[in-house]
Length: 363
Ligand code: ASP
Image (cartoon, rainbow, N blue to C red; front, top):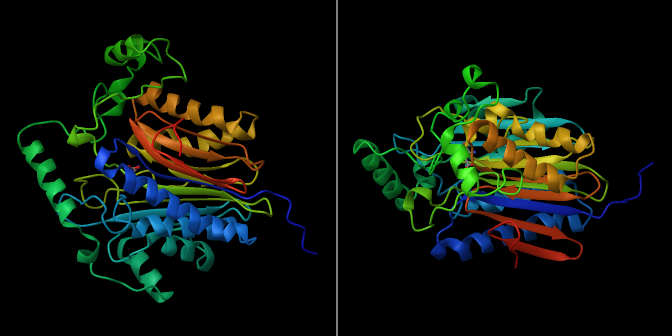
């Protein structure tokens, strides 16, 4: 017997966390709104959370505003290499792809992996061959590459050649090697880097209120447009799903995989805990398995609103990392947080849609 629908459907999306320059703000806002419309259309007619996540993420992959699908950041050799994961929290099924270069919509390939394969994760040529064998078109990598991104890569490589640090992720205080952000044994297990202490002291009380939020000007091009996409959904049947899709990081070495497509790192969903999607500096997020960390807290009673902020605090306090999170519990309570200057976000419920570019500001 089919159980009656009992839950009020919800969809939460993000379009990446970093600085968003003024002239890209409207595109980000419009982009997340279109994703909400596509995803909530599915939920509104009683469709599954998984399908809503695919619909929302597909729309953002197709939008060159974001670092997913066409328009993604380029690898150091000038190619687009994409990673995506999707997870169904009701059936506890997951599908992931990484380092794919010939797929327009890696989230759809991830969904095929989830549904059609006994395996959970495919990479590179194998992932493309699997997708093609299940009906997806293989395209030329060139189709995914924008002139804007060639320019951005050239600028990043010129900065590197001039000996300037890659600040795409690091920025003000933290080191590109996250372990250096927290001194180990010598100074005690949780001894902190002086730079971090200084920033926190100048920010006032250390805690989940500031979690190392950056204040760098959006005029600084090194901080622009860091735009992985993600969605978490709760359907009318009480099932949760999550998806994350990314072009990864600017000037990454070919073959590098970040947090986004790794289970429990940049994405996770379980009806018994929560659904989560993250964005930001992938390496620290991976080391903390931060998605699972956050959903586990919801499972043990922390409200998603608090757990989201605690996760970003933990990311910063433990490894000096920066990023953003959306988190949705099985009862419809949700949270989002970021310690980057901005994170494009959107929320759709039966009562309407909201979007914003920062925690606490909405349209
Ligand atoms: N987390 C992604 C990665 O490290 C990047 C991002 O979220 O923008 O690949």
